[in-house]
Length: 219
Image 1 (spheres, one colour):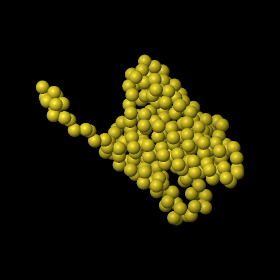
Image 2 (cartoon, rainbow, N blue to C red):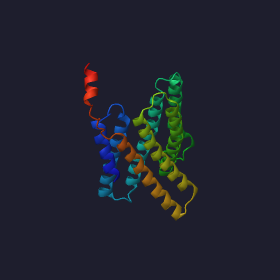
Image 3 (cartoon, rainbow, N blue to C red):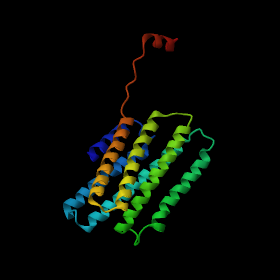
Image 4 (cartoon, helix red, strand yellow):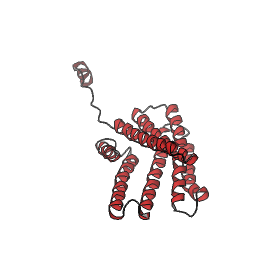
């Protein structure tokens, strides 16, 4: 299901706003490639092999970084035409640098261990969820309302918030029932987020012009 939705997303982007939303295309493409890499490792070494854990968490961090960057890019785009755009751009650059440094400052050591990967994923997802609130603030205050950008932002918000809740529940408790619930929430919200993206990029047929409109445009 995950792969099918990501493949559909890539197809829709190639047919539509590929350049405008290139980072989403990049994210979906990387998702497909990393999923393929995981399947190859499982077939050759098995899911219990230490190499699989390293591949899985490396892929997870790469995808989380892309989602975080996506929030930053969309936030900057939402400020188009605003006199504060330059200031917002500098602030977003600082946020990106802090997000890159935090895993090495407050993350578990040794670096690139499984504990470090988990802590880094938590930081990126919580940061992405908080940044998404800033994105919605920028969209609400924007004079130019872009329905497609609003839909893309909604899908992004659902995905990163679901992952933030997932990591938060796993951080707070080890109860099997709660962890099972967090797994379900993570899957549902992620699927919903990508489905909203696919809906946002769906081909939209233009309504045929009436004869009166055609005559008016000609004249």
